[in-house]
Image (cartoon, rainbow, N blue to C red; front, side):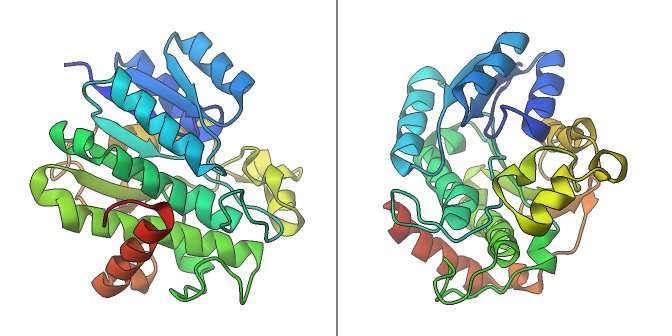
Length: 275
């Protein structure tokens, strides 16, 4: 049976690569991106549906969820792949720190707005996290948006750890209802990922050695594709964190259920969804 697979952040990078791979395998792929022209180009090339949503605006996330619910009676996979790193501390129109909102709060909101459809479909929810969850965070539940201490690296590490904590809590709350969640590190990908930042991130992703030293978008996309195609409990374990298609270690806080629960509850208040 052909499955419906929604991929955010699919206008380029590993999202676009995975969309092509899954489409080539006969799955019904839905492309979601921030940039209208790039998103339309990917969708047109593949001959698939597309939607535009800027995750710095939570009203657009709500509109996206409503459109998906109206269009698709089943959603078999939701890949929360959109994200980014930002050079300075800025607030979105919603009043939240941009890194926190784009990488965590917006996908948290989207997943919860689609939650009943995902449960009905026995869906997999995939979070594109990062090894940064282990390397860079200074995670403080009382300062999730870096009001007291901010650096682009720390903010990104905190957001990627939030992805893993969200995965754990999503699985704890709804795993027994048939929803499976997993997070993964795609590799250090040669893409324009760091273009919205400055300093070391922009140099790392835009420097002359990037294409030579980093993982290609095709390989990174294949890691997302592997999870999307995989059977939870057989090919990968729900609630797990993966790298190179294998279970991997991440930040020790990811194994603290109290932290995961507290993050969920605070995110629900900020996003305006039922806990």
